[in-house]
Image: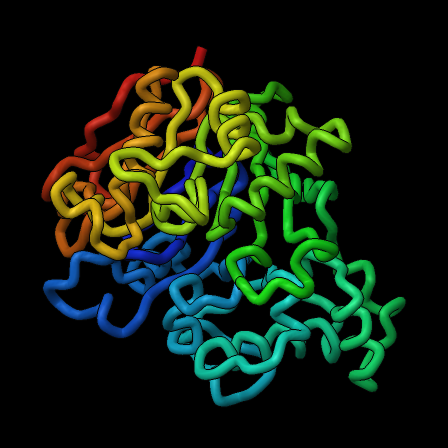
Length: 373
């Protein structure tokens, strides 16, 4: 039986996190590997090489793309074996069993480049194959698109569609609680960050809860406020408790307060403040998937990341005795920055930071003490 781990990869201002469960299955949340990341001297990880090393000759079990921004699927068509056309098939490509996407990725128009290819793959799996996909969100626009497609009726594929409040529990060792997208709030919202998938993974060992991990994608403060209100109204606030939080939108102030960055510190809007300060557990860990945090004297640069947001997170973990880690601030490994690794143990989540010069497969690591309990 494998040790459960989460790897938060250094992909610049982008996202990619790999969950490995206890029976060796893998769920990749977002994928960002543009061509430049494979160049010598680029400090971002080459995800193609990393996944080849982790998966060997196995298929990736699940690829989740949380929303339609290229920093969450960059290089997608260069690496993966796609079912909708032979153009992206070949022995050198990585297959994935299931694709998970938000419902807007099916019905929205105007996608180009990688986004158009990804959308075509999602539509093929939903309407033609009717398997190998999960859709998160159930908007009227999705229903209309399916019915108008001429390929399927909504009733034919509704078993592939999941909603906030649903639980996906077919993984050994953890389950996923879906927090968003809330279709009733996001259907007319042009901001793709507010249409993203947000989930909490609940890890269990010997049937005991040992770690609660929120993956925040690029959700902004309005989306978080909606998530908090919905959870409160439905008696699910406990589903927002967290030991680890992959914070939203590359440490942008917009995840805390979209309108006010602040001078030295971002003051979150009310529901976001309650989310972090009331639901964050003692010794919680916050992970920012982003470039290096700017210094205080450069705090007015456009970003993200934003110095002011980072200051709020640093103060939060200081109060709770936790940790704040930035993916692109990790020591250099053999060819890139090292990932932030969280091991799931029976004593809770343990932060593992590779030492400078260590390869990803090496045993040379620096481990922070277990922070649970």
